[in-house]
Figure 1: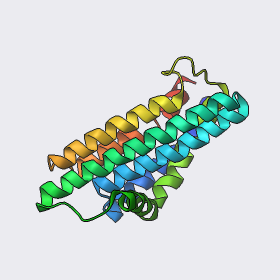
Figure 2 (figure 1 turned 30 degrees about the vertical axis):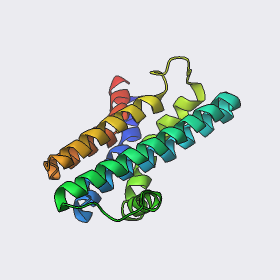
Figure 3 (figure 1 turned 135 degrees about the horizontal axis):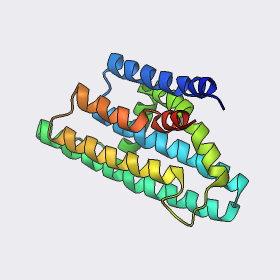
Figure 4 (figure 1 turned 90 degrees about the vertical axis):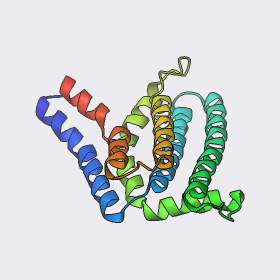
Length: 195
């Protein structure tokens, strides 16, 4: 692949990132919106990753990994709910009356409804690399799967995001710095420059 075609292959992910940043600015995405969007995108694209892995390599192991993925996301969803409930209490002085069984699906649905462009653009940015990796990955080394590395990065950024929100320092720059770290197609740019 020559340099010109390499540059053509990264323009769409970069454009997706720029459009996401513009929409986030226009719609005034909150830290909670972004955290639940990261959570839902990770769950959706992790499911696609493991389904491709199951189809291409190992159905039995893939089914076990899929169970682990959903179990982990269920636990992490509880953490997110608890963290933002705590932040709500710190800011308002009282707990919300929401039931956790109802509140988590409502938060996920709200993130999907309000931030749907994020999911379209994250699919453009993420899925090509995920599908390619899932066809050839070896799960013996857990640092090897691309999804494991991306999932760890997403988890760390959500912890940072909730911590910054609790300290009341989440503003324009903090949100978009996190969006840049999580969502900018660094891998595609690095691969294009190598070529």
